[in-house]
Amino acid sequence: MTSTVTRLEPAARTAGRPAAVTRHDWTSEEALALYDLPFMDLLFRAQSVHRASFDPNKVQMSRLLSIKTGGCAEDCGYCSQSAHHQTGLKASKLMEVERVISEARKAKAAGATRYCMGAAWRSPKQRDMDVVVAMVEGVKALGMETCMTLGMLTDSDIVRLRDAGLDYYNHNVDTSESYYSKVITTRTYADRLDTLSRVRDAGMKVCSGGIIGMGEERQDRVDMLVTLANLEEHPESVPINMLIAIPGTPLESAERIDPIDFVRTIAVARIMMPKSFVRLSAGRTDMSDEMQALCFFAGANSIFVGDTLLTADNPGEDKDSKLFAKLGLSALELDIPSSEHEPATCAGHQDARQS
Ligand code: SAM
Ligand code: DTB
Ligand code: SF4
Image (cartoon, rainbow, N blue to C red; front, side, top):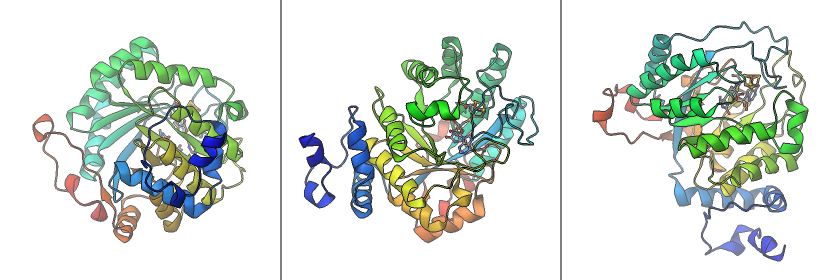
């Protein structure tokens, strides 16, 4: 452990070392030692790592759409959409392709560069695959990046989605392996990792993260990050959600996480996965501007925009544009040659401070 301790010395003592080293051999102890650093040292270190790979004033913007809501067979303790919980949510059928494409077009006009489509499924049925493949093709043709989150996938689903132009697959590990069974019992951690590894092997980009504030210990938070950072390749996108406590779910009364602990989690994610986009995901409606600013300083560089996530509220355009203006942040634009997609609207390329 001697070398580990040296590596975790306060930032002033590590000056001159490369700030952003991509590693896949993190230990749980090292990750916890990072989490427990004095807050100023942790943030300085996370910001230094962040600046080595990213423009610290640019934030990637994704938009979510629930393409199939509610009635899900899984029992995830946090989720409004599980058929196991009485949340009062109205279940709906798989959306029509045209509607999805028109919603994506609006999202692009409002500045989103990635369109994420989520379905409340354990895994997609074969008859649904034709429809979701058409959604990917249609959204891709708009010149947006595409992301889907549909639950577990077979190899043939993965190949179909990839060939349709799906850029990212979102599948969260959600928490540590040891805390997982306290939150979800209808599928295992190994099931999640298996889908992730087959998505990766097929050549798609991976979006995987989890939820903070489900009653887990700080060791669980960092162990979740160790699982992600020790994957053969780091997920390109790492969503860190703050639990939205939904009435009617087993986690409805979960104690709210201390904002400083949430920021610490973001900072550790940034240090351990220096080149990944760390997304400040669910829960922003319950965060102050100051808390979000600290999250950005700690290395978060992606958000969901728009006034809804899948079923829950999100700050929306007005609030986000004011926050971005206050912080001097702006939207990261996509680097796609214009001949490959429909011409962007003015709004699609406007500065995020106005969007
Ligand atoms: N059914 C698919 C699945 O579970 O993989 C996709 C949709 S699911 C809603 C996507 C992710 O959203 C979950 O893995 C979880 O991390 C996050 N999530 C769901 N409900 C949440 C809540 N109430 N608060 C914070 N994050 C939540
Ligand atoms: C992720 O990590 N967070 C998003 C996305 N991936 C699919 C979902 C957040 C859902 C928040 C609760 C809701 O809207 O129902
Ligand atoms: Fe279903 Fe996904 Fe919600 Fe779990 S998180 S209940 S799999 S929609």
